[in-house]
Amino acid sequence: MKTFNDLEFKQDIQRGLNAARVMFDNGYGVSVIIGPHTYGGEDGLYELGVLGKDGKLTYDTPVTDDVEGYLTEEGVTEFLKQIQNL
Image (cartoon, rainbow, N blue to C red; front, top):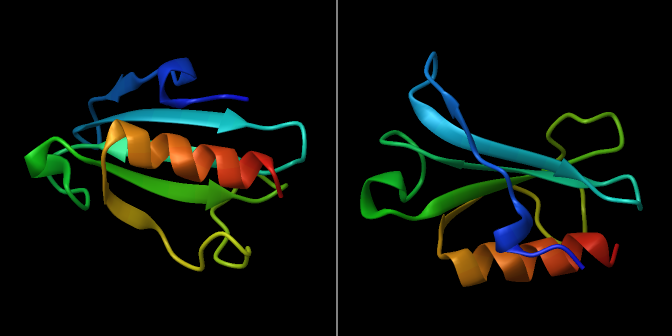
């Protein structure tokens, strides 16, 4: 089971943020970002989006129907667990 500590963030200079993406064995994945213009980024919090089997953001899962912002590391881990269990 992947947790926040398994994410590998890379700096995206063009968009001015740090980003991590990971796909899971069930075909879903996540995009986790933090930066000055993300939901919670100015407070050191993370924004998470669910990725569909095509690797693009999806808004149609039992976990969430939107991006989730203002997440702590623990909050990100909770979403990761739910998504891996889909």
